[in-house]
Image 1: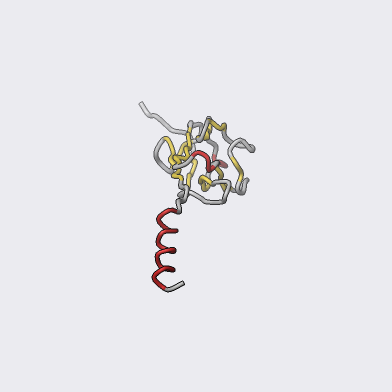
Image 2 (image 1 turned 30 degrees about the horizontal axis):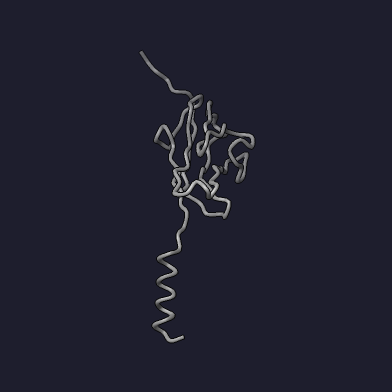
Length: 116
């Protein structure tokens, strides 16, 4: 094959090759949470067939998947009904193939105090 053919083959493979991607979002939309707060983490995905799962690293867990000792899965989301300080850590989405989303570092501190 000549160089032009090889270049064309390379460029066309880039154009037709798609990579599934996901973006992790957190609600409420902040990285500092309070003890007792409800938090929802969602994998917003290009392709649901990629099988994106939520994972986290904390001082207690490494690469633990939602529902494996933490969180309640809800479709492509994971809900934590009562945040605790040991839920502090790094959260991300991961596909079956090992692709990963953005990572979000969440810190959980003491209870919200409302003064009147």
